[in-house]
Amino acid sequence: MSLNLYQRITQSEAHVPLNLDRIARNYRRISRAVGGWYSGGFYVSPQDVGRTALQTYYNTWIGNVVKESAYGMQAWEGLVYQMQLTLGGAVYEISLDPERWHNNVDVYYSDLAVEDVEQGALSYTTEGADETFTDAGQNFVPWETAAGDAAYRIQIANTNNTETWAYLGEAVGATEIRCYTTAARTTSGWNGQAPAGLTPRNYEVVNVANYGVREHPGWSANANSIAEYGQMQYIITLPGSQATPATALRDRSLNEYAWPRSRFIGTSEGADSLAVTLAGFWGTTFWRYRETSRTAEASTLITAMVNNSTEFVTSGRIETNTMVLTADAFPIPQRVGDLLMRVQEMGDAAGNIWNCGVYENRELVYEPAPTTAEYLWRDGQLLNKAGQPVQPELVRPGFYLRAQNILGAVQPPGTSEIWDDPDIAYVDEVEWARDDKLLTLSLKHAGPSMLLRQQILGGAA
Image 1 (cartoon, rainbow, N blue to C red):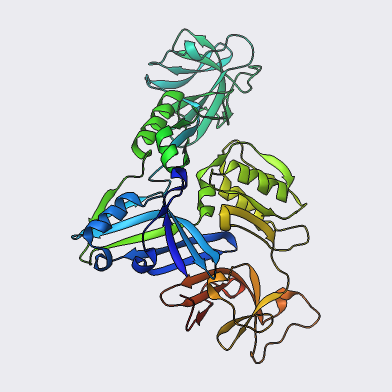
Image 2: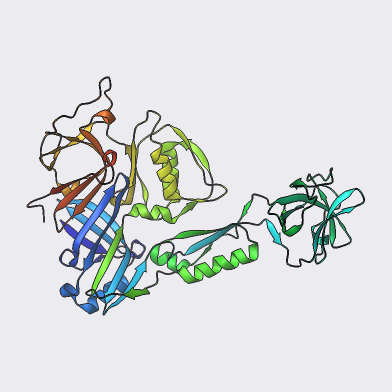
């Protein structure tokens, strides 16, 4: 096998003339039935390249592409997602984690409450036959409704921890306002706890028209960062705010996180090294959001989600799945990767498993999982259906595995379901460790601790 480094896709993906095979120690990578080429990593030692080279790699590799090939075929691909540099006892880190880097930001908030900043003495009062509320330090005139349906309602927390609320009508003077049980202001009075005998502690005023509506100032982007690394969208959610502070928070977050920045994160007594974390391009589908809901056939939704995803991933083999589903992305936008996973996990109308992941050429593949055992496990070795050893670097997840030479395994009577065969398990994750020549299979129905490992002797170089 061979391992090669390339520039970022946004920078033409030119090949970097570096012998990555020689310096990438302990290289291993993971593929999953949901995600495809998923994650990986290796480390670089100054014994192989020197301390200056470690610094250079750390400062230039973030977002670069790593490709693995074996037997003339592409075996895995991903990007440099995070690096941790230990040098002279100091530890630095740079990452494409969206919590630490995002170059297109929006803020969603509930513009509901008008906080009372002029609060004085509070009391429940009456004005003639009408129930009213008084705040000796407030001017209620801006919140009154003299005709038509009420525009605001008041929510009061009492000293005994009960709550009372009502719709606001006409102001009585400035510090007292009439209160009604309906927005039409037809009945004077209160909702919730009756105010008799209660003492108001504090309150807020809510805009009726905006109740339950999510507001946002709109996306703000750093075009230079997007051109360098691709677009990483990030949404901040607030339980309650207004336009001015929400916009200020959006702009501050963009200013702080628009670029992947190296950060000093601690100290270490360990040897100098550069630890490199890789992420498959499936991870980039979580870099974008979809803002509208859609109901359609599952395969149509998958194609639509891919079209909403990053500039890196395109549609590959999308098998037809006619089961109708809804991708719910309103009122709060959802990450495209999350929506892809929700469609995938529903399977199809017949109850079959479907796989979804990004593989060669950064194409997303959506297809039904096999319904029969595709591989055999015999005497600690992975074999194909013909009983021949397989090339471990090219094994992909999302298949049924049958164990042979197992004594005492009996399928329950009266069933032919593959799930009920005790000799069969579904492989949803495959890990390949190059230096150890070790293939590890994760069996979904056997629990996370049940792993099959195969040492490949004399594996391909």
